[in-house]
Image 1 (cartoon, protein in one colour):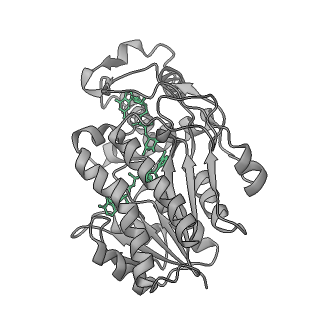
Image 2: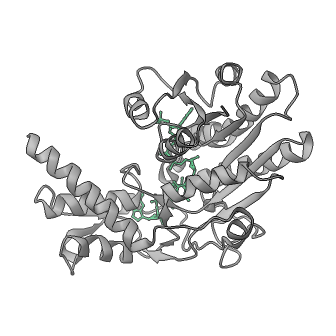
Length: 329
Ligand code: NDP
Ligand code: GDR
């Protein structure tokens, strides 16, 4: 039975990846931080048989302990402060977790393995935020980086470190440069879920409006369930490499609002959306769109869920959740 260790198993991607790996016959170990982490029950429900280990990306000894216990064949480093907006407010913590956390996981593998890195395969959750103020469109593996947030800078550090451990120690290390991916499990601070939830609540009469920032930025949005499959495929190759994972389509926040409100029968949403300066960013990433040809050709990967279907899936899920919660009260 192959063994996989996932950091960030309580997050959106960790849950989908955990499910996928259990379905493919893996023994799954998940790193969980903090005391009485409220997400443990969800992980145990969705990832049957998962073994949860206490640890934190800011604490090297706990990472060494997790590697020693799990003896992983594959390590997926998904843990991070992942909300770009928060990364300006807690820049140091973001650097420590999203950036230095990668270093600590890699060092834990080296220390626990007695310098033998030949057995383990490592996946780093890199991000399209590294492209930031984009130098070319669409963005691909060779596009230069210009991150626009402390988060993007920390991810760029983690990316280069992953490449460096591959080159320095021969570690089978892959960096997945993933564009935005969403699902009903997305955190409510991210714009897709913030909108799907607000639209559901507005249509049920539970909320009057939603306050947003920049409606003009454009993103390449895919479905998280599709993207974790690309992570797994990277670690099954003969040689380690870096891959862009994206749909190749870009849409604005306005288009997202169009599709989400249309799902509940509202064509003109202007009366329901407020502009709030708190949600504008000090430096914005205006437009992202990825070229995933390499992932398609080498990994045989392609996205299955399109933009409309994704947004509608999220609105429908929030309608069901919000209606059930309203019934209980
Ligand atoms: P989430 O925000 O849903 O999950 C983040 C995870 O990191 C959570 O499990 C969280 O634990 C954990 N975490 C945070 N701080 C620490 C810490 N100090 N020690 C250990 N674990 C910690 O992110 P996603 O699932 O959406 O993303 C997964 C990864 O992929 C992240 O690294 C993200 O930056 C990256 N990424 C995501 C993309 C996306 O569109 N979703 C695109 C490109 C990259 P807890 O639940 O306890 O808070
Ligand atoms: P992003 O996702 O920053 O791309 O990072 P997010 O959904 O937070 O923002 C997308 C775009 O929407 C604009 N926006 C708002 N965003 C939020 N969160 N809230 C608002 O009210 C709002 N109004 C407008 C933003 O300005 C931005 O342009 C996500 C994360 O998952 C990262 O971890 C990951 O690396 C990247 O995707 C790829």
